[in-house]
Length: 220
Image (tube, rainbow, N blue to C red; front, side):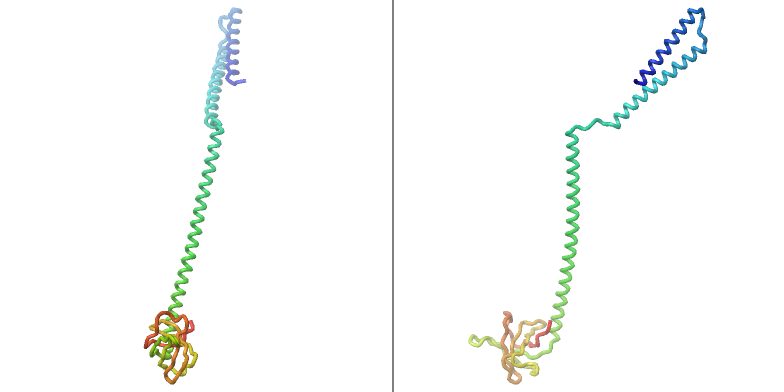
């Protein structure tokens, strides 16, 4: 039973009791009901009214809180919309994470490639420097005296030999110009301080000229 209704019923019962007591007092010839009895009933009635008002106020507060705490249930369309939004947010987050991972991988690959290229450049520079040094420091064996192009016997070079002990038939010599090597020659004959040599395959398009230097091929 509702508390407010119960309190209201109690008040009505007390009022009826007071009315009956007043009526009985009049019937018995009593002018007034004892004042302490009326005071007691009045206090009970006032207390019950206060309790009724407090119960009504608490009920209103509970109804108000229930509205705040328990919002109306979502419809099926609203639930589906929330599920779809949550799915899209998850997919966006996953896509962002994949882009971040890809960027990190690319950065690592780029750093590794740059390091490898830098290392190769250094090795290449070091190799060229070493080859240049060995070529420049190689002992001078002879010099080109003349280069002839012969369609019948093939091209050949006559040499002025500077170190005869290093030049024999079938000796391979490298032709040095400045600090580079243009190609190699094979000695075919030696006569005193002169020798004849023929260019080996891969000599290149640059023809020997008088003054080009001949050295033993450096071991790069």
